[in-house]
Image (cartoon, rainbow, N blue to C red):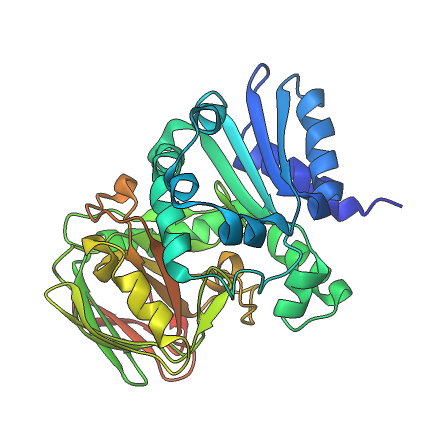
Length: 356
């Protein structure tokens, strides 16, 4: 029997998030493991008199690609692949991995090299040329990574996605209004004292338009404003590899010192990707209090109510961001135990609870 929550999620994605109209081309990307949701989306796109286009791969082909591809293949973006995105009006990316550690044995420089090659697609998508939404379909690999049973993880996913997004949107607007009027942000916490400026930058309210689940407000800090240091309580995960106890020190907006207890070499490699990789591209405020636990999945973890996240690398231009980079690496800081956020010297959050 088909899970009715899958049908409900497909409706939310197509109507609330992607706002699919008749005659549009909807690119649906996933692996073979995401078939139940992909099938529901495919049928519902047809019912809306639109055109579904599938981009399905097998869940274990990615490591094969990175182990086998030549330098030329890593560096080449095929015209037909780029045109696939440029000719569609909507992209629905259903994440359904089979192994969360499949890239752990791959040389990081090969992955960053490929990311540089496909950057034109990334830029096309995030620059507003097409409507897009990213979601998870519960797989055993995602459940295992989150340290849950598959049944528990299904409840975790659908409990975060199938909610009243109008109510969530009103709460996020209140946060955005406060930070839009501010300039200097100061974060205090365990081994953390970091300041940066939001002057002239407007926030983006994330209420389910792109990510599902959603529940954050994010900004692009002024490029040279970050000053101080931060330690991340949760692992920073990059291409399936965990970097634990990350410490970053900033001067004039740039990382000048970086440490980690595990996979420090990966941290250094990513920081050397390009000049923009050492600067902050995003400051995000997690505000979905229905997500209460860390799951090693940034789609959920950056939305946890009472956390913030800072991304190294590329800034989203919609909020006035200027920093350019081939990477965008979100790292989540838990402020629910002893953390504070000050906005222009005023305490606006303590222990994860807002004082607005």
